[in-house]
Length: 158
Image 1 (cartoon, rainbow, N blue to C red):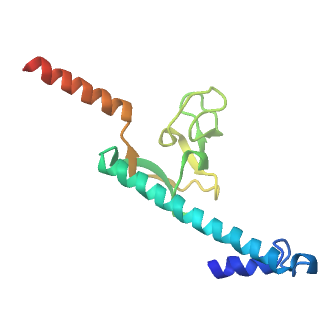
Image 2: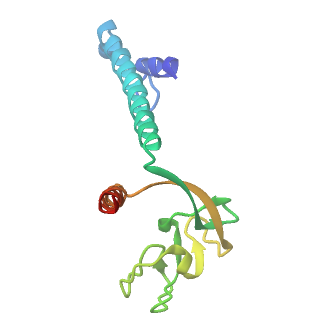
């Protein structure tokens, strides 16, 4: 990756043509190499920060694994998020309701509640409800309230 990024400093980014002579000075090429190295280093640190946040949340039990029902498109072989699903609204029978809400009646829906769901990626109606394993946040406020309530309960008992 580093070699390809450094190599791209010698070529323009639009058509792959060599840079004009005025931009081929050692100073310009050196600037491009430094900028590309900065991108690689910042990507590395962002990755490390994300990993540290995940490990901290997981270590404090703020994350939990859960099984959720989600629509699965068989031709695409992928789970579909709300934005990739359309179907018939169960409330007003509007046929182009999205996976998260109906544009006609404004009802908030779950994509699994839609009647005749279809995939927006491949326009297939061969969509089934399947269980998927996901990692979710334990709502911190509820978690803290439960801890406070439990500590107050323990205090009253003793």
